[in-house]
Length: 208
Image 1 (spheres, rainbow, N blue to C red):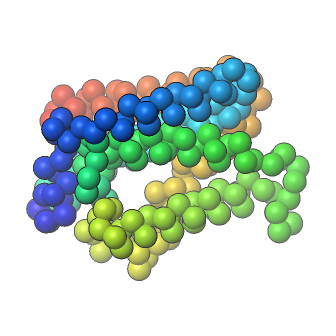
Image 2: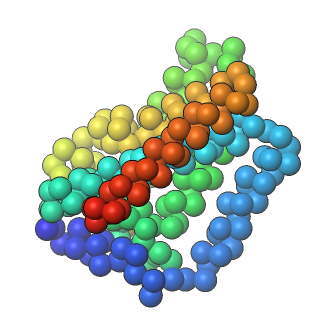
Image 3: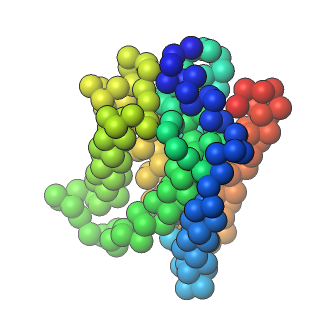
């Protein structure tokens, strides 16, 4: 087991790490979503939930990788936190992704607008994912986001971009553009349902 993995593992679900600032952060997330419900802005609401659900999917398989290899997760979260949920996910990251999807969806232009002569959705997926990878590289440099596998490093960011973030924004924008509220709810329900099943199953195995 790497030193980084050991440091992150020591934080996982340690209630003594609790900080009171998690309560106002939770209220901020609830306010963000309540605002979209109030406005009946279902495109943004479900787009945000889709991105958040995709992050949970990634965090679950990342924890499973750590259990199977007993060496390191693909990424680990270390440093001060109000609560460490999984080895690569703390409560601050969780809340951040909950809001990120809403922000990305709110900034979407109409589908007919083109960027550099191309359909805007693929361009914005690629751009948003690239910006997110840039932030991750900074977090890695300051030591709060750790990478211990040679194929997941700042020196080879395309894999982080492709696996780490492209699916997030692709799901967010796809759900945003679905034609009916029912379709959006069904897709988001499937994503979050799969996450819940994986958490229950792998959690019961002690893999998380």
